[in-house]
Image (tube, rainbow, N blue to C red; front, side):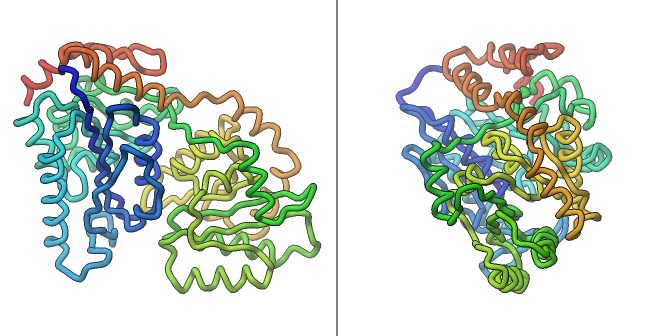
Length: 428
């Protein structure tokens, strides 16, 4: 690909539920921006406007959808037929790509997008802009192996990965979890998979951290515990267990507690949390804009263990207590077990989440955090550096060399085989 005055990156994040997708997309975008690089994010997140977008990054809002079941989605706000809403989203995505003319198109998690809404764009790019590099970005773990294999076979995902994507970026370490083996990825695809490592987050300065602790009213010697469940749509169980622990605690302790319900917690559940928290003198927020600063100021964070929260806590060095959900997907549970095995997190199984178990884990971690903090200090997060190297390759190498470069990138390991972009296009 020849050099151009500006380099356009288009990113797609379907964002039907929670905060994870838009947070990961924002983290990547903020680190890939540089002079003469424009980044445009396609997102269905209803709260995208609450985030601060730095220069050279902007977003296009597509109508939000909410998941009713694994296969059924409904419009989040506008009162129209679901198919009509999906058609609007599909047309906006395609029109944006045709107008923006990206050099790089990064799709988050869903190879076809929500209900195949990205498929026309991928096909148009291959047909009309064949030099555009198309990337599928996958979090470290999607779900258990049986579910993913069955779902991808049914939807024809293996063929889509082979024919419409230049590379697949896995935002994790292969030695932690190997999706090539777990999800039975064929060699024609696996040779184009790049294991980036986990994605680090911005670390606030010590002065910013101390300001947050002061704003939260911490006195000398007091500990800060933050309880957050991401978007909050299914987080009430965790909030309930933590509040029950505080309600049963017979003695005052030198601990300050902050609860963030998340913007998608059902209204009635959120009201219950706020009412109980007020009686205990606990500060509670619906949404916290500078979340990374609050998490950095905490001595312990209780959360559900989504990909982004764990990456944030590992970046910040804050001790995590995870309560991973195990339905409708098992990815949080699998991740919690893997990271617990490496002393990077402590966790409570969802079925065992109650006041007594919560109290036991919380006070153990506050009194003896060294095993986890030591492991965290040694943990390397290479995601952004690897992606920057790939971006340099895309901007500076001839297309036929791009996949050769990618095949050698697996946290220092060489993947088997090699395949040029020319070979990929012959298969389309």
